[in-house]
Length: 130
Image (cartoon, rainbow, N blue to C red; front, side, top):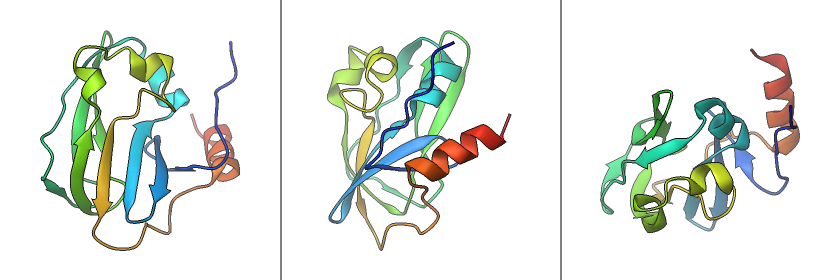
């Protein structure tokens, strides 16, 4: 079994999203651990820009050969962009979860949430859970 990739320099949620903060905007994707659990992703429901989401609200769904899983907003904000490549290439979420497989960008309605984990915290979270 290969080791799960957990890059430094970005933050993580306990629901397995990664978050890259750039000023008042965050880019969100799912972690290597999450894409591995879902297996082959075959469809991504891409929401329209301009929609507002509460922290913890589902933003989009990923459909894999195994299941359908929601991806949640790490903070309250307005959707700026959903990754247009995923409409025709949903497999990018599996192949490049921290790169071209990003999912969406939100403009934050307030400060980033304090409960985001750094890479070491996320690794510890993964090691402690089922």
